[in-house]
Structures are given as structure tokens and as C-alpha cells.
Length: 132
Image (cartoon, rainbow, N blue to C red; front, side, top):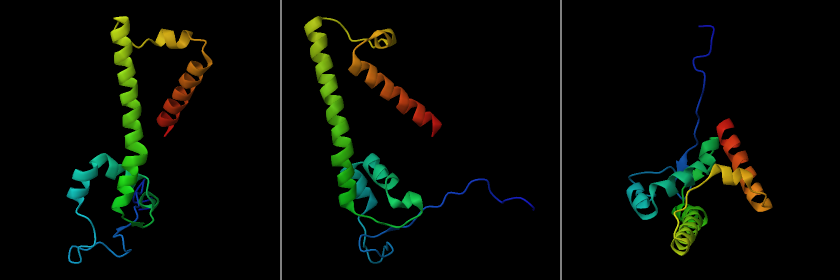
């Protein structure tokens, strides 16, 4: 007694069916979670929910199209960028006959303004993530 019953509190909103009503097995007014995960992937569903009003203790009208939007707007661009990088890396390695090995010394020694900017932006992101 005389002190709070808890130190931290996590309060989530409600995930409602697309029609705004409470999800119900009897009404079957929501897509099967297993089918959504099999179709779009668990990471897409997770990202959709993390970026929704639910994490701010508000209600969310679940839309399968929202999960598809995450796939289109987030995961496909990430995948395409990484595929582009790897394809160019393989092309460089085959043309030079060398294996690419990242070097912190080369990154720190560069005077190219774009490289300096990318390195600074990366360090800001790392600092932000550690602070969060």
C-alpha cells in the first residue's frame, strides 16, 4: 500500500472487423488470421498492426487491403533495393575477380560527399534506435 500497483502500463486498442463491429466467430466477419499470414506473411501483418491506431489505444477496423498495402509500400521496395544491391555486388565481384569485404576504414577515409552523408544518416539512425 502507499505505492502504485505497477510501474508500467500497456494499453492497446481494439481490433474490430472491417464493418466496425466486434470480431465474432459466430458472424465470421473477419478474415482467417492463418490465411492472412499464409498469403502476406507474418511480418506484413505485424507491421500493419504496429503502424495502426491500436498501439495508441484506439480502435482499428481491420482491412486485409491494409496488410497488402504494407507489402506493396514497405516490403517490396526493401526487397527490390536489396536485390538490386546484391546483383550489382555479384556483377562487380565477377568483373573484378575480387570478393567484396566491407571496410570501416574505407568508409571513414572517404571524402565523397554522398558517402559522408550516407554514413552520417546511418549513424543518426543507429543513435535514434538506441535511444528508443
